[in-house]
Image 1 (cartoon, rainbow, N blue to C red):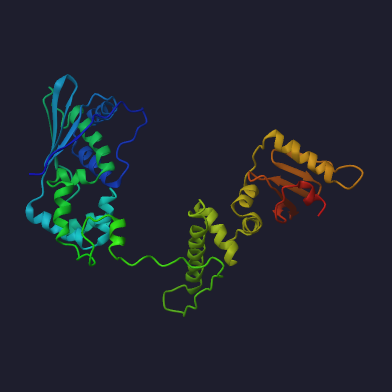
Image 2 (cartoon, rainbow, N blue to C red):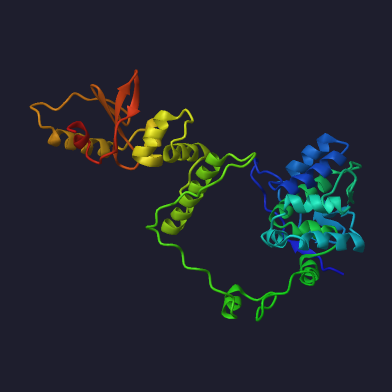
Length: 371
């Protein structure tokens, strides 16, 4: 029989703490809430789960249990899967190598659960699959103690989907041992469970050297095909190449929002997305240039004082120009300088009543005024 797993009691939680952030954890909570006949008791259970009064939780095949306040024994029973269902489940896991990797990474893939359901293996509980029991005098179904136990169990499920599989009847070690017999044979000299370092030492071919960074990207020649937007595919290919280059150069990708990445694509590939000003800002200053275009901020006083001194020192005329200042924006007649969070000044000029990016940035604002 699979050994039970014990989990330490959860400490008191803040008032806004959430239950079940994973999709499979939310399915667990939904099954319990849909079974409940009393919303008031559910509300009490949610509050009680955050008080720290639920004791250590024990998870074993077919049940979860804990001792709650006043030494009440609280149990929630879960229907176990039969041997034939487990065999079908293991077949679904072994059918795709990514399933095992995802489970070991403490993730429960949607497609694995769907494939299991198609094979008549219900992993996630449905209405009526959870049977709460408690020694307290409350006749609720579930009482607040059993509801609290279920809510706390969702935290365990979030952290490790093998907890759900254990409730259904089998634990992690048992499942992994059963899966070893369904995996393809390892390369010569490589044993199942061997460390990656040892596997490479055993003769697994080394990864190829990265390509040289000074090679210009050559867009692929793509033939038209039904249902394929060749131009869009070429843009995506170039974008993937750019991302790969960033990884090689910096070891990470720049953190861009979806909007910033859309502007980047439009700027680099001359796409007409109605973002003309944003595209021009990106071409001059990248994400920093886009930030300066769209957001005002208040720079430190010492930064502005230093910039004023540079502007006065670099002015060639008899009197420095009058500056109308507002936050990080200095307006000098037809020219506006905007100070970025990167410590550079960005020039703007008026176009049909609106300020548009007018050139690359400089750290010395005087260089932009005299240009």
